[in-house]
Length: 422
Image (cartoon, rainbow, N blue to C red; front, side, top):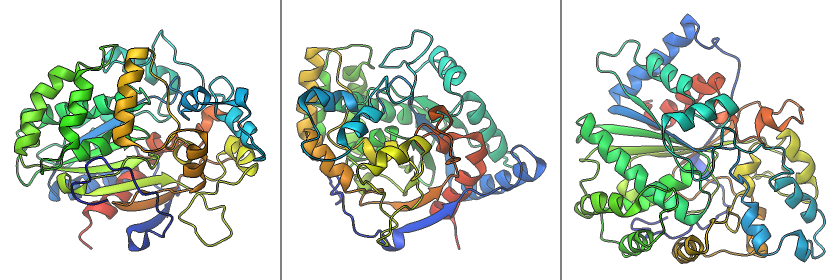
């Protein structure tokens, strides 16, 4: 996407990413937390520090209880009650497999509801319910910090941020504002400045939050920023962060180009659906990682395989990789709880995403795009397809990125892609 992208949607290009693309496989290596493992992590920590990384932020939501495939919106515009199939074999079965209550993904426990609160009590409930499945646990965050900083005189803090997991445009936009506020606080607390880098890892739709943040960080006075801020200040407060007060803090800093105090923001997305366009002008380096196993026979190995009715049989064992990344595309979404928020969401929708309705969703899903137009791309086989149909073991290929056993692999690939001097 162009500099000054101004919230344009990604073009969903099926062309090969060319030299932007690499592939990798999670292979058995040093046992997690063994001396060899700690030594390897410490070496990568030294490389990150040498590259100027002074803080790492882990941004995530929840797979469970959040309509992760976005079926609520598809049902709202039609669903099985309207006979979506229209002669397309396998569509009804696919929608049934994606729908809450039928997809095997449990509801939230502990009385949690969406939007999630970014507090320790909520994070403890998530850690207890789902462990490290699509969730940067407290144990993961602490171990990452310990391992990377083993030999560093100036430690790299690792910060865990939980976003609301409200999978609609208003929810993601407010989360982007919250993220920028948190990054500003991080810069102030650790005195970050020119020459310093923040490394943000964003799982799933948290990557869409980061994409919106990249547009807000555009150093030019784009027209979309005040429009979006105006819409968000009118959004009713229904458990989300107080958008108006956050905007009041960050908008002058964004207009002046000083929010990050001249530090660079590097972003790694993990299993993020291709939707919002990125604006590279206000961020540093960008990498997209997708859990992927090639099932195609046409040589286009960089695309997923979206063929009906076969996809419905492939999903329960995560045969082709991450099916949430593949299917939670434009046209899908959760539905806001109140009519007032729905009205604001529609206005934000019109600014951010030109697609709506079942036909447009199916069109986007069939494009089978794994990567957006901007950034480095990594197709990674996390080896989470074991033949098991127990959804909680892989959550349709969307859980692998945050597993403790993938920490060394992820760190190695991030350093190799973004910070290698070779």
